[in-house]
Length: 151
Length: 151
DNA sequence: AATGAAAACTAATCAGC
DNA sequence: GCTGATTAGTTTTCATT
Image 1 (cartoon, helix red, strand yellow):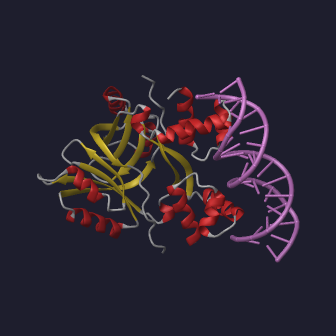
Image 2 (cartoon, helix red, strand yellow):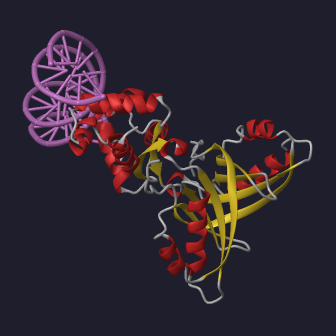
Image 3 (cartoon, protein in one colour):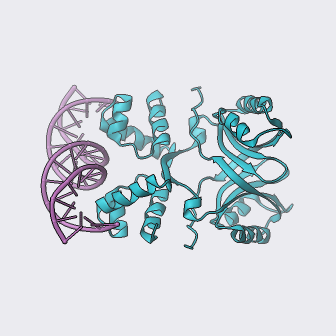
């Protein structure tokens, strides 16, 4: 991965629908060269997908919550993660250091939906305790930051 | 926004580079109709952008952290958010209910980078206390979930 | 790895319904 | 708000360097 690859990645992080022709003009390469490079980045697992970003409220997701989980002593972290992945409302799942073992971000229609998720979590094998924090407002999400300097 | 719009949105959430022709075949409309609908969704602020998803580790982001912030009594939440937005390492910024007022997700190259961010946060006017939790592993992020039933 | 050229496909525009 | 036709632009493939 060279500087051109990183330039392509940043451009696609900012506009995931940029055409290869446009990207080629940006980095000073032909269309097919850009296609080659991006295919390689995709196959190498550097670019993992392309997503439209949407306004959750417009889609009917009225409530976002962060939920910390404590696990019971015997629980296997990996097994718990697999069970958590069945709960489609969980958009993000981080295994963390600290008192809680997982932090989740859930997106639901309303408080009733949140109640259902928290209840499901409490009933999930290996989960001993949940700690729910409601998001009052999202200032920003998934902002594109600068890439670290190269090694 | 009707059922076809929601179908288009879900398709674009899953593949943000789907062509309008392809989307048209999916929903049973012509290309121009799809273009129309998507333009309208973009202008209405329902679709807010398109992003390539990348593997943070491949780009040199070795450390992800969740950082809770307590604000000083006099602090104006909005002003603090503006100052926080200068810290490019903060990918997500949620104003939350509870003991902490903000929860941030930061992505940095290494622990040194994390130290720098936490130090900057501590020096930010209006921030009285930080609580940093290191992410040990990301099970998933930004997963596409089902849309809530219509009203 | 990159290029240019050709073929196939897609996007954008627009008149008509 | 959708369609079909037109034109312009893009993607893909491939022979060449």
